[in-house]
Image (tube, rainbow, N blue to C red; front, side, top):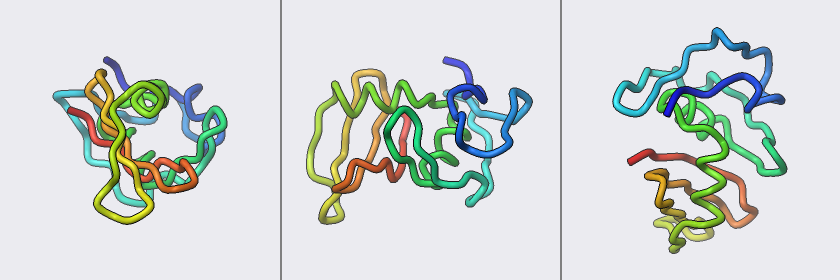
Length: 105
């Protein structure tokens, strides 16, 4: 799976196709606070989640698949849900459905 591309983050600022991204097995360090919170395809993402996705090469479609089709359970923090996808992506959402963080396999 390749890195994220600018088209998948239409509202995340002035990122373009040359914005570095990591990939599974070869993550990059993304400075915390690099990305601003935004909405992608009707789902809100925290800046932290976007930083993790960028650094680990996880596209929004993989996160959405984990949320929609994965195993869901209560998170460690009240009001959070952990979604474990068959695609190897784990997403943590808050009670409003906002993606808080993303963890690849």
